Length: 338
Ligand code: NAD
Image (cartoon, rainbow, N blue to C red; front, side):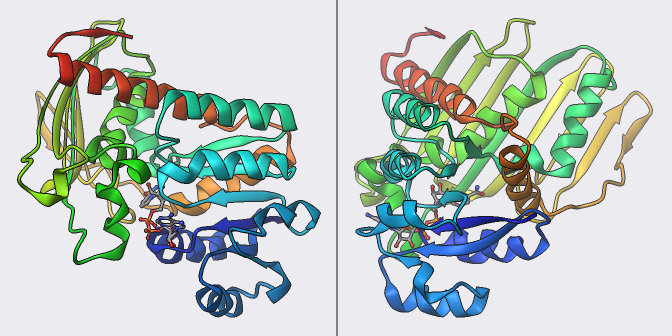
């Protein structure tokens, strides 16, 4: 059985990555579109075989409650709108898949979790890397002890944000819509990776930030932020996030026997693993897989089998709590216990 998904926000990521991925899904299909641009919605509806009566605007979105063709609402709006649309979807009696970062504040994350609980609906945060084969393979190798005892992790995410050249970048430098700068948008991949690679929750963070305030991009949000995380087992993670460097999406986990590198680690399609030990370096062969389709099918399976998603609202909340602790550490220059 395929569940019906309503796509809320037909922007760059929805159109270029997620909507095409439905073609590879076993349990998910697009049955409705929610957009502020009727022409764009009609064009995409034709392309994806969505009935015109299942096109909604942001104003009449709540009437989606009367549409049995929609089981899951997938929110692909800027983060500042995630809480509002998750709560409206839950009130409409729909399950929710929401893009990362979950929301702009811990309080909003909690409201989203409560709204879905109250409605008896699933809430999943779209952490695609946790459905990506190279990342899953890395987690399995660390768990099996292939690296020996895990001691440290480094993780870097960066790119050059260009709000004047690219429409999808305009909200990314506005605090109200983005919640923050590079940390909220891409540094969160470094942060989330340290948690899924260790399988632990950090207990302490430190951070430093640098943003050139004369650069109009960084009037409201941060550019570069470095942070460290201390985990209960003693693992130390050192992470970087930047909006003004050439693109990077990588991490490396270091054990007392070997290290494992993914570069890129969190790209859309191509990944690369290297393992180094006393005998030298090797590149294990791992089959690429469609992480977007795997994530969508997982959401559908959780609804069909009444299971808790692997990346529920609580997973998004944990990251947002840590993001706030990192901002506090950067602002105060002090270690922050979490
Ligand atoms: P985008 O700007 O291309 O898309 C956002 C959409 O929201 C647009 O269609 C825009 O018209 C619509 N929108 C509705 N109300 C708006 C408002 N008040 N202000 C601005 N836009 C409004 O951005 P995107 O890159 O597609 O990102 C959308 C979401 O997806 C974000 O939450 C982002 O973090 C997430 N994302 C996730 C990944 C991933 O790999 N998981 C990658 C890119 C983006």
